[in-house]
View 1 (cartoon, each protein chain N blue to C red):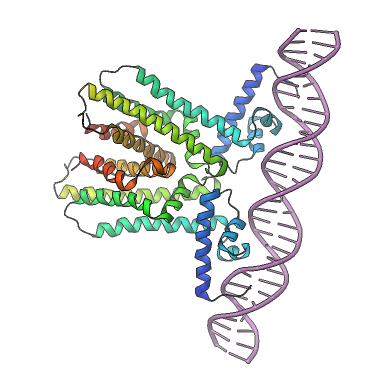
View 2 (cartoon, rainbow over the protein chains, first blue to last red; view 1 turned 180 degrees about the horizontal axis):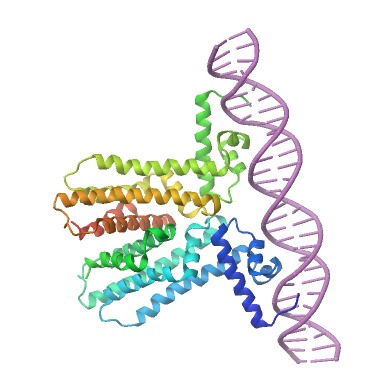
Length: 203
Length: 203
DNA sequence: TCGAAAACAAACACGGGCGAATGTATAATC
DNA sequence: GATTATACATTCGCCCGTGTTTGTTTTCGA
């Protein structure tokens, strides 16, 4: 009806994204209608088509946002030169898991990525993005282990790449299992145990 | 065109299911058309509606088939009274992972379950089924650890439930990471290493 | 051997979502 | 203060998939 100021337009855009998270979470990406999102965001489909190219473009925005958020967390943690890198990484993973319990937004977006969308055709591209990020994160993990070797906390003959991949899979699995059944795991209680179990035979 | 004999009808049914696997894998469950499946199976939509209620019913059949297959494998392995349960379980998990590399059908179906369908609305039911199976499998895992305790291979104070859950998440994570990027992991080579790493600090 | 039901094929009606085109009122710009 | 670009709302036409129904042929059972 009325043209908004630039600032308000940005708010509209993020309102659409937030609405998309809810709708994707409730109805699934493929089943979600642009009209569903528009209604939830209190706008019309026209508004969505102004800010985004189409539904995939909305999804892309959400995807990007989360991916960057994770990489940032790890990178900023790596800047901190902890005296015991293994404990540092153990703590990081544990915190990352526990955060899922508190951060409703991350919980929903991750649920969408794992259980509310099918990566076929045009969506397949996002699997490639996730893989690229995964490799990157594995690389970051191995940096912790490399530091641990320097501190003599870890035998020099340990294959840091395998351990990093194992840790990545381990965390991924815990996340998947948690998202699939929230009731089966209480992160605040279990995450430290799970992580301790993994790092026990390293440190 | 012509009515088939009962035996041929069963073949038609399984042809439809096989075609569904291919189509779901290629286009995703939500995006897959019953006509796509019919074409791939060399029948018409009428045939599908004869054998199944609708697309979800086809999916349900595939889902059931795989779920049962996994539980069977573990159960039959448990009947074998191995002198070293930890090694037995390590070997079982390793074999289960390596099988993904050889068994194209399981690979595709698991890919569908993890990356080619969104569990919204009516599909949400399948998450419940998966959770039920997961709990059951965790229970079966813990049986191995209980046996290991009897053999004094495992300290009595180890929390078998936590370890079982951890193992389940670990395997799940490896499967997910493998399905998402087949090239990043060579199961025949990596699976034993991953599993050895997990069981190293137990046995 | 002769109905009856099985195992499909073919045709039908129906809705619903998408993309684009158009309309419109205001904010930005100069 | 007039013009232009912005930020949406509204409308339109189109296609595509679904569920159902009806039709056809053949096998099975009594």
